[in-house]
Length: 274
Image (cartoon, rainbow, N blue to C red; front, side, top):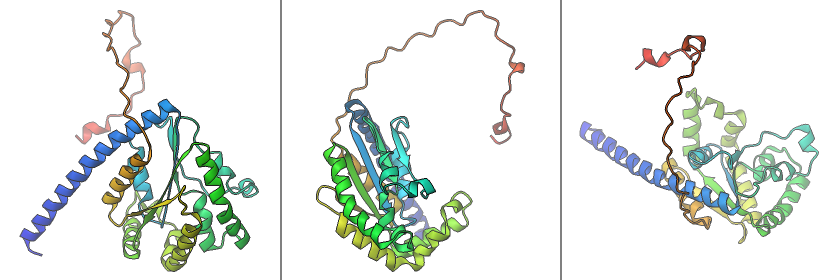
């Protein structure tokens, strides 16, 4: 590659990043408006994020949550069930984390674990799996009938891109935790996961509760597409914020405040750097 070609590629990449950041900011402002509508109308929103390991679910969730008020928007990412939870109805621990009026819940993986990793890795019996596929459309219909806005996203990634992302995590101290032995098994069990996904879609991609597939080989595009689609599926209005009168700050009182050297200050590490 010539120096000129390399320079053009870098320039094009910078221009693309600039466009991405501008559109992401615009969409995140809309997300804040959408949340204000949800809070003021008492709507309930559940968004399910599923897909193969390293498909980009976490990155999309992070950008959606970035400017939302965490008091009424939260991410649910459940660990493996405890012994007590294993004795419950399968959906129980998910149901208790559903939103109340005015809340948004983003599920980083969901009850669909049973149709994915549990099915492929043999963590559930055939009976449990078949019962799940029979029950899940009924459960979702009940949620929708009760007025919950339910969205289901499937992040699709190619085998080559998945492996590339796994390898990049290997030497990244901030993302190394994301790489588990179960993740790496998804390389050798790629076909098994494909079969499981197809069976899951056949049973649960329903007119009232469809799966929306996102091509996520390009992370930036997938984030923009996800947020834009999510916004299109929630019938929100842009509400005018309440008018605010900015008060004048009162003059400082001449009270004797305790001396500053009696307080514990965090050492100024930044001074040595900047």
